[in-house]
Each structure stands twice: as structure tokens, then as C-alpha cells.
Length: 147
Image (cartoon, rainbow, N blue to C red):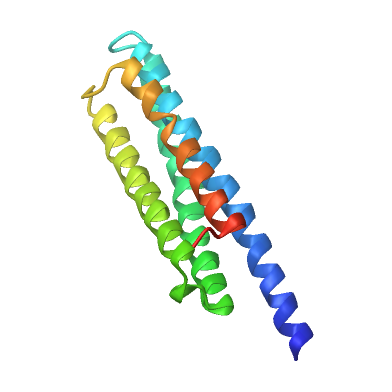
């Protein structure tokens, strides 16, 4: 029985890490797509192509990766009893912030598809740093478990 639980833990952990990588890759790509989208000439066919690319990235990679990351992560947290641990609460706060960031990016993609440019290229490039910073904190919390 102990071996079965250990294998379940390892499979959950592997699945979680795999889908986190997919999710993070999408979170890094989408703001960069927005920069290219906004730099394309207004009314050009290139802009329509960027709308399509952004939609596909969200539909094929980002939304499924978000859902599966959460599913594996919650299952993993329940299995190891992390819900009562301080490091997990801090990690959860960062993951909730990344989820809000994801939702914001999805709303920005919809706005761009309507022709609304609310951010400059410079701000989009800065926004692109958010997932990397959050990931660094999350990794430290999970590996070091400082509290």
C-alpha cells in the first residue's frame, strides 16, 4: 500500500511539473504576441493573424494547462497534507496571482481582437516578467519550505 501511495505521489508530481511548464511557457509567450500584434500596421492582415495566434495559444495551451496544473496541484497538496503548512499558503497566494494574471491576459487578448490597445509595448514587455518572478518565488517556497 505504501508503495502505491508513493507512486501516486510521484505521478501527481510529474504531471503537475509538466503542466506548470506548459502554463508558464504560454504565460511568457502571450504578452510577447501582444507586442508583435500591436506593432503590426493597423488594419493589416498581419493583425488578424496575431488575433488567431493569441486565440489558439489560449485555447490549446493556456486554458488546458491552467486547469490541469490546478487539478494536479490540489491533488498533490491533499496527498502530502500541505494545506496546513505556511509555505503552501504563500505558494497558493502566488498561484492565485498567476491565475489572475492569466485572466487579465485573456481579457487583454479579447480587447486587442476588438482593436483596443490599452498598454504600450514597453508595458507589455514589463508585464512579460511577471510569471518569471512569480515562478522564482514559488520554486523557493516549494523546495526550501522556509516556513
